[in-house]
Amino acid sequence: MHQITLRMAREACGYTVEKASKCFGISERILEGFEQDSGPVPFSLMLRITDSYHIPFDFVYFGPEIEYIERNLRG
Image (cartoon, rainbow, N blue to C red; front, side, top):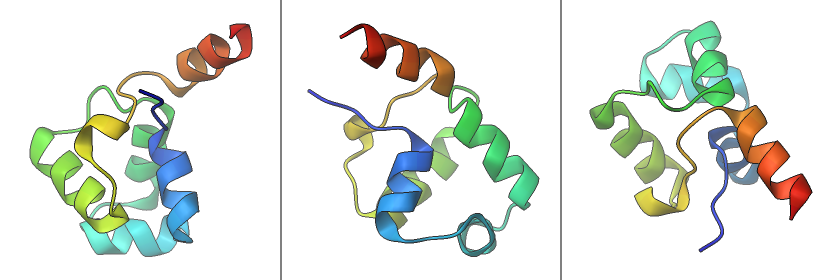
């Protein structure tokens, strides 16, 4: 299954960092950090995010965004 990053999911929904962070009750800086590395996102928040973005939980890549990028560049 092909997965996407949190940033990709947010952008696909047309949300800005500002709009998404307000929706989840977190700062823009925290959201940006979670987009860079989704590994430490609390489970309850991840469920809210995936629900708001209308994507299945399993569709999200959990971990550092740079690893996702490097893995997909290698093929």
